[in-house]
Image (cartoon, rainbow, N blue to C red; front, top):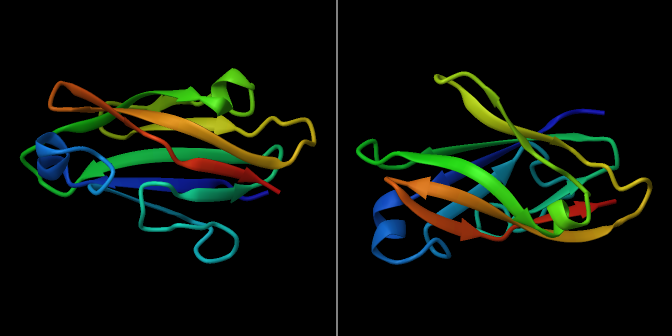
Length: 129
């Protein structure tokens, strides 16, 4: 099974001035083969039990720092996927394995971001097929 990479792109200036709902854009390596809402804040990443997912974040503005500080919500509470920080200072990402023991369904989760010291969250989905 292939690893799915999710890229979170943040308009950090907009997010700091307002919120994340209109300032976060997500895409994954599934392209149009199963995932939905690409380019929006509520990406639905299509995946299978046993598949590995990697999350990375970057800022549109080079003058702002953004990082993932954690995950909360349904995927954590139901033990569907428990991402852990990986990599080095130069390339940090979060990796988690989908572990539904054969269950299928849609699971919402929250990604916690740190933008220049301010904590903000948004809520995409995993769609286990």
